[in-house]
Image 1 (cartoon, helix red, strand yellow):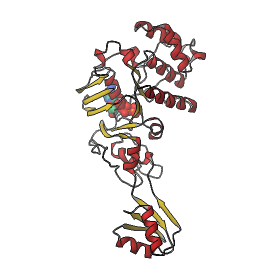
Image 2: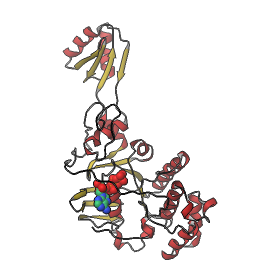
Image 3: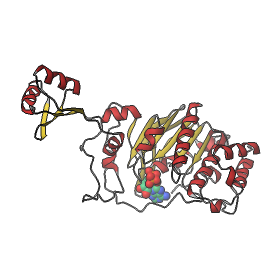
Image 4: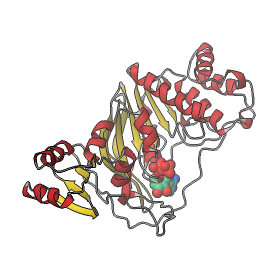
Length: 356
Ligand SMILES: Nc1ncnc2c1ncn2[C@@H]1O[C@H](COP(=O)(O)OP(=O)(O)OP(=O)(O)O)[C@@H](O)[C@H]1O
């Protein structure tokens, strides 16, 4: 279990993480979602004791990382790019890591097999592709058979087979009762992997909810109806206090009653319907809507103008959603440090505290 209370990190005048409180529960995959620069990596680095919080606390299985007696057995992490000795083979890298943590060599063979690295285990890590580097990082994270796994953008650089492998691995590890916390900026990926999501934007939590609840909270109560008697139907609906707009001839957009109620009302009024469609936003739309005010690095919208507003302009809302939108947008975008080079290893192999 990971527990953060009032966790904050400032870099000079820049607030990367803004007093966040959350719990990552064992036995399920928790996705950590947010746009570029939202604070995901900084949070994960603080969990792993690699960044010193400006305020607040974070514990893994009840203890701050620095107090864990057998850290690799408690928590394994795949974090941002770290230089690994590129002349070393994957096997030797893992063996050295195991040796310094009192882990038997058999476990090195096990994680190499588990991560599909057998055929390249004796090759120099310097020649590894990004995907192979990610697998090596995951192998290292698993080395101590930890109860908690922290994976920062684990599918980065993986081919489709690798993406599915990470997805299944994460689910399997959670099914064994472990805590699995993985970050992504892709809602579509998290929706397929995670049971629960914590959404962060500009260093603040925007939602801490199940994937199902996030979808439900974002659904628009909106029914699209096409009828040659649209005017008559609109009059009946307004009598029932429904909100009705007419985006085009013979089409109504109805807010209030669900599709079944609209259909029943039409039948009772002997009104012919050519279309009756409940409109639901996708999870991706829910996520875009939720983070619309928290995107730090916007891309140009090809249709013109910067950034793309959510299609319905709405803010997802629901019982489990944190109060949003988050922090003010008063800081300038900074170039983001490059990361995820081919030469990656988990931070656990070279802990170096960044307390700037
Ligand atoms: N070492 C640092 N020095 C200064 N600013 C930093 C440092 N590390 C992160 N930041 C800034 O803190 C903010 C949060 O960064 P962080 O890397 O945690 O975000 P992220 O959600 O992981 O983003 P991404 O998806 O792009 O990896 C960003 O504005 C980033 O530029």
